[in-house]
Structures are given as C-alpha cells and as structure tokens.
Image (cartoon, rainbow, N blue to C red):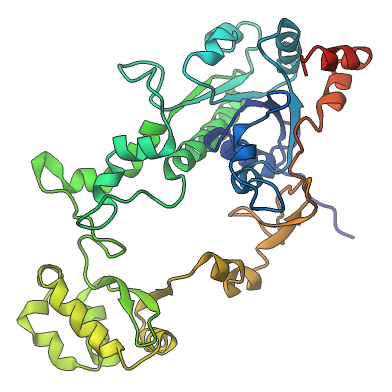
Length: 396
C-alpha cells in the first residue's frame, strides 16, 4: 500500500487580488503545488478575464487556463465590511498577491510597509507594468504594450512588419517571475521567520528576456533582423516548404551538421564546397539563394519524408503544428501529460504542469464559479449569521 506524498506548498494560504493573466498564472502554479489560493473577485462581475470569450463550453479560455484549484470569494472592497473580511483573511495568510491598477493596493492599505508591522511573516507580491517608481509608474500596461516598450516587437516579425507574440508573453514572463520570487521568499522566511515584499514589473521581466538581442546590439551595433520564423543569425534554421505544401522546421548548429545536411538530406555533397555556403556567416549572407535550393530539393518529397531524412541524418527538426495537432500530440499522450479538472461546465482536459506528472501529480482541483466559496470562507471567519445581510448589501 502506497501513501500519497504531500505537495510542497500544502499548509500555505495565498490571498490574491488578481485579474487577467500575470497574477492568476503565478497563483495557479502555487495552487498546483498544494497552496490554498483564495481569489478575491468583484461581486457580480469577477475577474474580467471570465468574459474574454466563451470558447470552452461557455467558459473563457484564458480563465480556464490559469484559475484551476482556486477558491473564489466575492468582495466589494469599496465597502468597509469587505475590507474587514479581507483583513481577517490576512490574519491567516502566508502570501498576498495583487496586480491591481497602479496605486490601488496602497489605497486599500495593502502596501507591504503598512502590513508588515501587523503581519511580519506575510509575503506581499506586487505585480505592475512598470514598477512603483520612475516616470512610467502610473502608465497603463497591457501585454502588447509591454511587448512594444521592451523592444520585443523590434526583433519579432518579418522584415516588413513587427509582429507580436501569439500568446501573452509579457504577462507570462511577469507571472513566472512572481511565482519564482514567492517561492524564494517562502524559503527565505523559513530561515529568517520574516516575510518580505516581492516586486515584479512586467517591463523588467520582458527586458530580462531580451538579453540576447540587447547584447547582440552592444554599443550601437545593428540589432538582430526580423526574420519571420527563421533564426536571425544562423542559417539554415527555420521553416521550409515540402512538396505537399506543408512546412517543416529544421535547424543546423555547426559545420558538421551542414556537411550531413548536404550529403544525406539534400543529397548534394558539392554544396559543401560552394563558397556562398562555406560557413554560417556566408550562408547567412546568401540565405535567399540557399532557401531556394533547399525548397527545390524538398519539392519532390512530402513533409514526413523530409522529416525522415532529417532524422536519419541527426538534424534537428519539428513539425509546424496547429492547435488541433497539439491536442493530439503523441509525445504528450505517451508521457501521460493529460488529466482532467472539473469546472462549472463539467470535466475539462488539462495538462499537468511542467515538472509534475503521473508519478508526482499536481493538485488539479476545479476551476471555480464566481463566488463559489464565498459562504464557506465567511463561515470559517465567523460570519455565518451575517452572510445574508452581507450578500443583500452587495458586500459579497
């Protein structure tokens, strides 16, 4: 008989004033590890990400992704009684997370310096667009705007057009740094007995990810060119059409691989000595000519035949998958990455988070309906007899 091991964050309580992606992603990862996450939402409306779309059995795709395993408590924090309830929650909380509008948390009395004297063990994680000082502090910050401000758009796209990432990459970057920052603060608290503030700015997170192009453009040198789905400085490294119209992604890293590519994939060994392609720098300069040669060679093959040749030669490659392909990806199936979570719309498929899986499963509890846990949480705090009054007054 085996006993299920406790998850690392069992016994940790997180209170989150969150919306959209960055903070909810951070707290969902904490919930995956066993933390109790109490999500504060506006009565009747909730996290505005609930209304982004209705693609998942009537639920919003973003919300389904980042809000499993949480408890939803509705509070109108403009009302004094709601703030009293929040204060009672913080008495038992280990972590407070917020990504409200600039200055909103401080106006609610939730700044770390105000909370620390009463709650010395509390970790407060503030997520904002630009941080809490400097000339951009009050500036509105949405994912696309931070992609732009951070320089990400300047190196992403085609030579003709900037193209944003197809996912909320700035929000995700901020959320993951918030997650790792909170974990580090919990470890630190275990040594010192004291909580601290974790401040995450979306701009800081994205600029950290821009390290390669920034250093590549050191002291005014040209930045990496926008190269679509191809690599900006290594060639051939990117998408190529096969004869069936499908696209194959491939990448070469060194001269040994270039020789194998010419011999075994293109089956044109003479190209190895062509001065236009003698090394990566030359291939990069003459990429248009090389692109035409490669696609001409692939024209007689379908995509799977191209991939078979690449695999046989030990050349890195990938399918250019669609979302439909991803749902049925054989590697995810073979490794048992899929499980299910419950939701207001019934059971939904969900992926185990990275680093966890069948042998070490994450907590995969339901996606909450708006306010689903309000009455139960208030009962814990001693508000049982007042629930009807609070509900009627719009406090919850």
